[in-house]
Amino acid sequence: MSVYLPIAEMATNPFVILFFGALVGAMSGLFGVGGGFLMAPILFFLGIPPSVAVSTEATQICAASVSGSLAHFRRGNLDIKMGVLLVAGGLIGSTLGVFTFKWLITLGSIDLVIQLFYVVFLGAVGGLMFLESLQAMMRRRAGKTAMHKRRHGFMHGLPFRTKFPRSKLYISAILPVTVGLGVGFLSAIMGVGGGFIMVPAMIYLLGMPTLVVVGTSLFTIIFVTANNTLQHAWFNGTVDLVLAGLLLLGGVIGAQIGVRLSGRFNAEQLRILLALIVLAVCFKILSDLLVGGPAIQFSFTNGAGHG
Amino acid sequence: MDKHLWFQRLRPGLTRAPLVMMTFMTVAVAMAVSLAFANTARAQGPDVAAVESEVSVGLFSGQTIVRVFGSTATPDVPIRLELTGPDRDVSFTRSVRRFGIKVSEVIDGAPQVIPAIRAELSSADIPLRRDGDEFEEALIREGAVLIMPKAIKMQPTGLFFAEIPLPPSAPVGDYKIEIFQEGALRSVAKVKLAEESFAIQQQGFVALVSRGAKDYAFLYGLICVLVAVAAGWITERVFRNRR
Image (cartoon, rainbow over all chains, first blue to last red):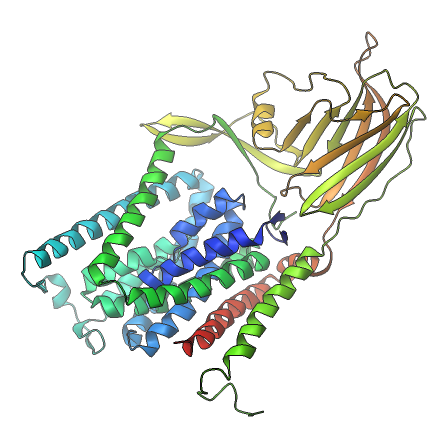
């Protein structure tokens, strides 16, 4: 049994794609991350051309995020007001990112830049989350209640302070827009939804409660990945609808499983698990950078979608 | 039937079945149609009298297999078969260590345009590889060049048969098959005996998608976004009552 992917121009086993789609979809529902940083390497490994993999995956993440954020919305775990501000920043950031991406291509060695971005951000985010969750867990074990320190820094002196009732916050509207901007920018450069950066940024920078973070992050990712899908299809012609169909059939089902599973874990366990996965991917990319592969490699440049 | 089926919060069981059916059937139909893409083969007559040959191309369990039948008057002389796929731009890179990390560098003087897929077959155990060519080595390693010694089955009567399994990455386009006589005879390296050609093209749903993606890129992108949003929304609807 095999299915032909028209844009990737290759035949593939649909069940393998369905399986990985469901796996990544489950992570999406569980953690509120798109899972793009995991799916991209998996698709490369399956032999899908990188350009097609990255673009098509944006479509899958979009679908999984729609499904996941609706589920969170019904549970009241979505801060729409915060989400709208994040989206506003995110769309500006992703457009800036697309232009930077094109500029980096003209400079050459775009691959290296992407890999370094991955290592730096996955390492920093994963390490930070891991340490923080470990501390919180140890504090709990020692019998003390986890303290919610409200840091009073320059952030609280910013204008346009707005109430966010869902998140129980009273902070400047500039903050979520800035976070969205940064996430959108990185999302376009790294070809991911950006959830793995947004979730920690919302928890640690904005101080949002973990319960609301996942739904709001998924809500933002919908718009960022919809924008990415459209741009990739329009300008690069690298979105494969058949591959996307398989990925999102697996993905949406996985996301629902993830949302249900998330009720069974507590927040710290979830964060430690996500931190470990992020660090593992970081380590894999770093080792690829350090350990030499084959000396000579090649890529067909006008293969996918431009034959 | 209730006219407001989609807009009402119905009791579990009423909305679930048709929605699940719809989602799965849509994907199933898309997959089935996608499966139905076919390769067409057209064979030209042999241009050298020494060898009669015929090519058939078929899709077997997802893999494109090219079958070559032929006959020769001199079964003792080893023959060689070369399959050449459509040309593609290529960039060869070398990994270089800079400040401890691997960096890819484009190699100057490397081939710029090569066939996306190539296969070399022989009837005897003749060395087919050009040793020392680092680009060729890389292509063979990644399966863009297939080297198949003794893959042509030669009968004592002079009838021969060969099967070339094309990898899933074999692109659409025009393919050429050439049959040579091996250079058993002193100065002449190889003598071309016959040439065949065929084309791999997309049909049906697959062709529709790839043409739509090229000719109506913006519309295609919008459709992709709509499909994603609809799929996410439908699944959520389906799973909503399931608890």
